[in-house]
Image 1 (tube, rainbow, N blue to C red):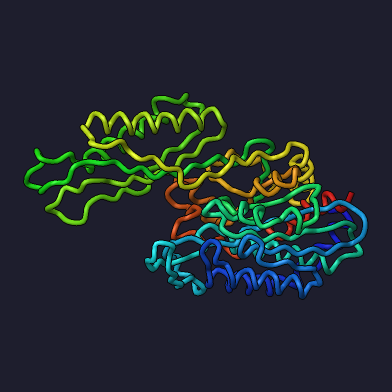
Image 2 (cartoon, rainbow, N blue to C red; image 1 turned 120 degrees about the horizontal axis):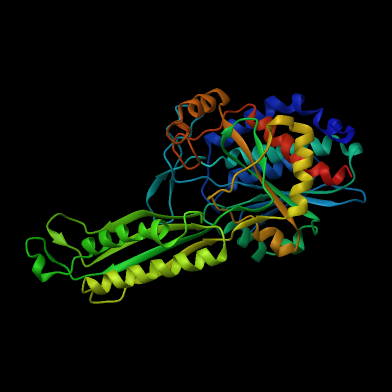
Length: 418
């Protein structure tokens, strides 16, 4: 550990209990995208307490805090704040019981099923330690709290609201995500790290009739079922086995009763790809399959294929990642790894791209190490280790929080310390 890193991190033990309490509070009180008002207030109030100059309401609920500390690099660190419409099933004493009204007007249970509460807590902890040890570093640290990552529109909302004019130009942008790896683990990856994602809503049209008279109908339920089955062949039969991609049908809705054949069905799906060529190929295959199946079924109307959200691929800057990886190896030792390519997706990269700045994004583990080791021994990681967006996903508080705070500090100080 460098003298600079030691000086800043030496205060971690003193604030650990406060951070754990903050994490429990955030976990118990999740908020959906672009409605993270309570979380944003927590972040902005904390930053002001640390002596940061704070700008609120960027893109709705986005927050930045800046403590200028002399001449030196400008490092931006980003954390996402939003939760998911998932009913928590962790059984934790601080589990969420929050019910919110969704954008469709229905009531939805909400939980931090993706670990953004860890990200917010870690960045607040990092910001506090940076403020407490200003004598140990020089430059400008920008703490950025982003809304609505899950919807893929939060980074864009901040940019549209003038983020690049409201925040200093960064020399590098840093971000991290808690993942289903053992707690204490940190993993970097140069180049492609997270996949691109495209969400599609497909409406297929049939002809409604009485369920006892199918000869009078064009059944959109059967049409949708054939499409769903055929979509499974894109990855298995149209892509090479070495080409990573995922096509998941996550929702089918048709009809309202047992004795009526409806006149349409709506399919929602999610596509993950890791390069532009594969992305184009898969999306074209989806359109071909949908249109051909509708024609084969005698659909009276062409299908509607809408892209409802899109996430860019996350491609880490090689040099920035090398610098962070070296700093992690020196600080974390055998807990620092090269992480596998991930099929999850993020909108974070839009922020450094708007500034024209390099970025690096890494993963930290949040799973109880003994549970993970037992699952690995039994070959049951996929079955026994909760993953992000699961109703049972809840990172263990420690050493996850210590790792998240330390990783962000060590990465930032790889610039400030030089």
